[in-house]
Image 1 (cartoon, rainbow, N blue to C red):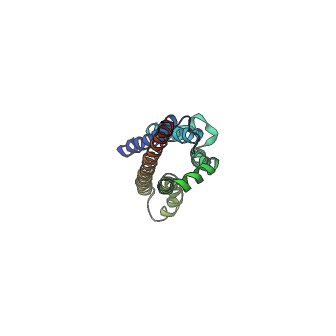
Image 2 (image 1 turned 90 degrees about the horizontal axis):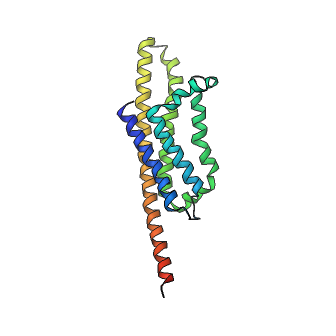
Image 3 (image 1 turned 30 degrees about the horizontal axis):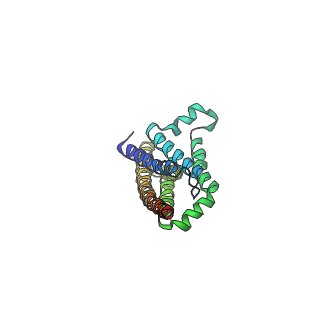
Length: 190
């Protein structure tokens, strides 16, 4: 538990609140993204915040022993990619209608993924290579410190881009909802 982990958890929680706010604000709306899209992303992001604080992914090996030490990585990769596949048509709609906001959010997710998953891959590749040149104690300490710095740096950059993209989207969506409401009021007045 570090300050950067708490900051990341706060970022993920805020990012998760945005689709949740839209879910309740646009409950009866039929426009994309759907309720399921908003609920799915809100749930995954809020879970990500909880996981960042309590490191649930590191406890999975105790709860599901057959996963092994790093079995959580495959589960999280699937959880990271599946919503993008399942909600492809809604993401396509968002790309066409809110290109800048969607680009920033997807870029942030990509950078976040490089930080989170790339750091784990780096550890697996770098450790055997560097063990040829350095002692084991130095190597383990160096790789772990570098991996953590790399992971935290890229995850925070990614999360900041996602927050920015989501907030831009929320702002546009609130403006659009206000315009639609004022049009409805104007149409009902004699």
